[in-house]
Image (cartoon, rainbow, N blue to C red; front, side, top):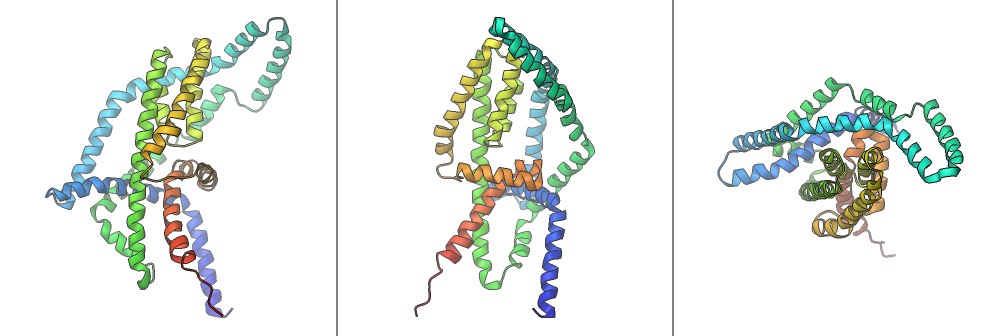
Length: 343
């Protein structure tokens, strides 16, 4: 390896180190790109009816802000009130479970009591009481100013990308060799379609899960229906992990309020997830993006390990992008055209 190659390799390592240090910033940029790609479809429709690019962008952004503002006014106040009640109910859960086991076990309660005392001691020693878990969670995300700046950064960057997307696209294409730029442009188009299709599919799934959860819990007379329905819909954005977490909250309330509701709640959520997995997802995603369950789970674990919570939230769109580029470049352009030379 000569001096030039050594210098190039060193520059490559330094670049990797810099990218690793700013990985969270890159995720925020990726978030802005996702929003820009989704909103760009609306902007193009407005352009097709005679609006200018700037007018279309501003109308789209203002409409989005108006919708969010209305939803916040209608949903946020009751959601906060009910969520506070949910948090207040969490410390009562171990006590109620203790009472339930005492009623069920009868004379054999001493065995359960010893087990519960040991279990509670482990929890106390490790500061894992529900109230403490909530306090730690709130403390972890209490840096409101930092989150606000990140949201503003993503919003501004989204608008900037929307105003002139072709300019940034041309800069990206210049990174690749001239003979391959046309092909990269095709891949970018396919990536955009994949992201929009995935986003549309996941939004339909989230709304479906949220509505069905709310309807079922309403008829089961479970308290705090709005909180449970919204959490079920939002957590469905995180496959595998989200649906499991969503059932914990209504069960928590049922344990404290009406223990007989626990089994119906579990059965109802099980039915919802089966409808979503075996009917809705194949129907909605049939002509969109399909990801194997094992690939989805691996991607969630990988991106959550590397990037933290934000990586977990963006695991699926990241996987969609990686999948599209691997299929087009690695499989179609390289491996499918790789032939052994005749001797």
